[in-house]
Image 1 (spheres, rainbow, N blue to C red):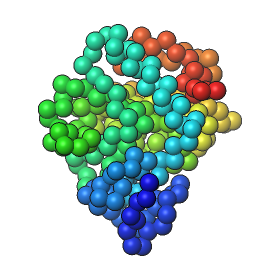
Image 2 (spheres, rainbow, N blue to C red; image 1 turned 180 degrees about the vertical axis):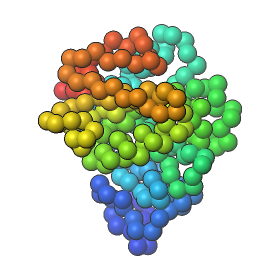
Image 3 (cartoon, rainbow, N blue to C red; image 1 turned 90 degrees about the horizontal axis):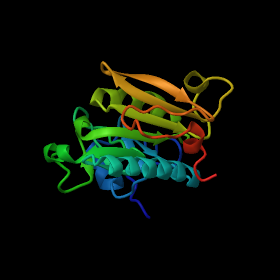
Length: 216
């Protein structure tokens, strides 16, 4: 897909791809039709969805959809829709996987016309599959998703790209499950054949390696 890049910008890579900060409306005009870009503090990032990245996201989506179907919850999985926090005009996150509460959508001002959410109350769960922009997943999004009140956030680092302060040394594939407690995330990490624990999806019977090695 050809994207009209504003004057003074560089072509997409793993770093912010433009020099001039963009607000949400500018981002939507230039990049909103392509689901591989998101906006953080006015900077546009390429999400770099490799094949393995997409297989991990698809595995998480499949397992969660089965759980939702079995429990009859009024939820559905939104892949790569935009999350625009209402308290900032220069951010638009695009989670790899987001579980949306259908009952909350009547409160969303943009949903009827566009796949854009603005309220954390609409979202029950998000997952990010780590790419080279790992700092955003481990730092900025942990902060913003907590402020939005999203109950559970998974960070699936299948290639062990995160810094050692986040996943330890020696680095190894890690699934970090962040659970919201009193407005902040408590983080549990799972590796190898460890069975994961999810408060949002308690009936998921999965080992960390099943998620992190999806498709291999």
